[in-house]
Length: 539
Image (tube, rainbow, N blue to C red; front, side, top):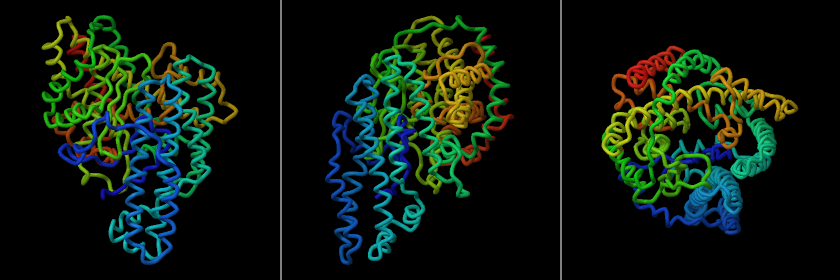
């Protein structure tokens, strides 16, 4: 049995569903998994689940029941633990396919809460089994001392924490409905409630020194995203970005309107054309794409009812993943988005388990590196694809302009979002009003981007994955550092092989590169962008 990861399934990252164990390589057991059409959502039998849990607790206290206990434990994980995550993933996907559906909204909340309950119960059950007077030694020998120790040091969620998570899940599920309906006032109120509840949740947790976390930002940086820097420390990085990327933004804006060529890009074209981009960049990655297509593990449909997001989410039970893309039918928007998401998808097959950090950390900075670096290193292959299949003049130049414009946007805007969230989660509860939110967002926007700020609620991450956004900025600097290096393909493969279960420093050190948070690295990347833009866009 593969070692289980007891990742805390907070409601705050479920959109991206990074609840996975390390995936098999592309020739492994995942190929025996069912087609997406055969993965049917249904609520799990709660009564049966509770009965089995009671049986396990009874068996733990009685000598001579080793075989029965092992059978019951195996049933718990195969029939309930794995399936709970599968149902949670299916409910989330179906809700995102139709964000107007009240049924899927309800089911996505139920499935998430049930999965969190199963996750918490699994840890309690394991603690009972491995701590059993009769069976603790046997199960420790069977699954290893390292695993047993990880169980004892893992924290069980209290009833208070589970209740807070359930409230947060319900509010998060409201976001799509409220946004689609244009209910602005309700969105402000929902966000205020989310900030307060998340801070309340964070204060139930303790840091390495045994002190309660001050707010959710501090908690999430350390525990949800496994960052080696704090919200306070990242301010130097944000200032470096503002200093070096604002001039770059103004430079590329001079070409605005010159490169707006576009063509229709339909779902069947995505399926047909992407293999050539992959093959002409890193042929070894084709098996991941073929698996995804063969198993139907994607949604490229163009629909007005789809959620305003794109992502890759893991099917824990089958050790594979699903790609969801909110397509627009445009080469400029959809091609880069699918390439980006495939960087995520492929990592789940090519990451090497033996390179994982034994502490089980999960770095979202690294996860976004796999996607953003892939966009950059595929540029020659995209050029070949566009020139071979589309006739519109300047279409590749427009793609190039769009990619670099969006990259500059991503670095600057996600610093905006991080600074904004820092101000929100550090604010006193009485300060959190609609006017305070508006003024804070506008102030941060002007500092990093200039001009009139959009509405903050247009950024879904602020509602469904708080404290996440800085990973886009940090990882894009790291991605560009890889792209501008002497051997970008090999460095990219190294990043993928190290996967996401590592600290960022482990991976850039393995490549012989510098920290992407260092001001010198930010400047180096800005200079590389400047040279490329001057030569291929402005030149």
